[in-house]
Image 1: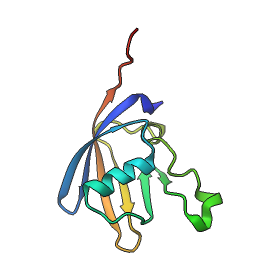
Image 2 (image 1 turned 90 degrees about the vertical axis):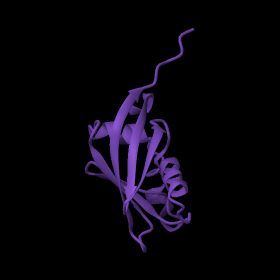
Image 3 (image 1 turned 120 degrees about the vertical axis):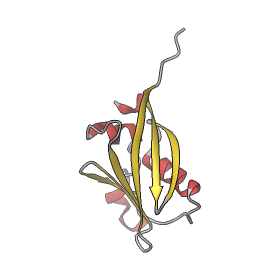
Image 4 (image 1 turned 180 degrees about the vertical axis):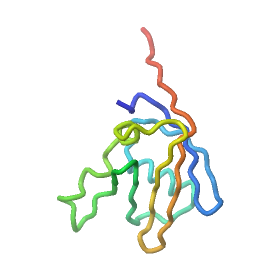
Length: 117
């Protein structure tokens, strides 16, 4: 699916913007960590991606059996499963107390070329 792509994404929060290039094979959990690092956010808070009409979040120790795999989805699979393309946007909510709501725009989708032997 979408894991064979690199995604150039504009991630915005309250006037701050970062352009990130993300491999489609990255998990949503890893992508969340990248955003946290780029925006100097304190780790260890819950988060949720809203991509199309689907929501993805992390495992939570108290509810592990329910949420275990929700952040193991690949970035590329989550984007392609709802048919998002260049110019489309999705959301990332970090820290349900402080409610840091990021807007993420897909600037480009680049196919990763396989190495030919």
